[in-house]
Length: 60
Picture 1 (cartoon, one colour):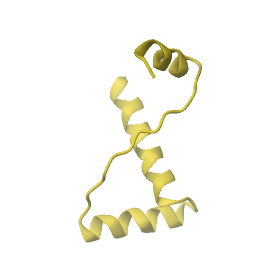
Picture 2 (cartoon, one colour):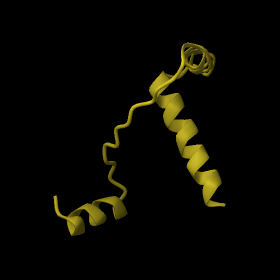
Picture 3 (tube, helix red, strand yellow):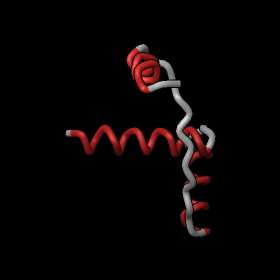
Picture 4 (tube, rainbow, N blue to C red):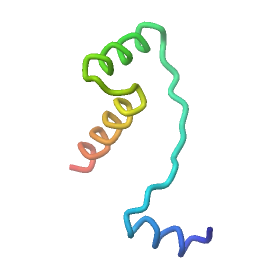
């Protein structure tokens, strides 16, 4: 996919896959899992929400 097509796709609101590794200590991992369970969401959904909230907050 060339740059122009990719930009048009993003403008249209299409999702792209963005993968990254998150390295946590055991206590941090436990905290994330427990919080996700308490919120009744998957760990990946919880992490995605936190990352997006952080990014939106840093723009202000």
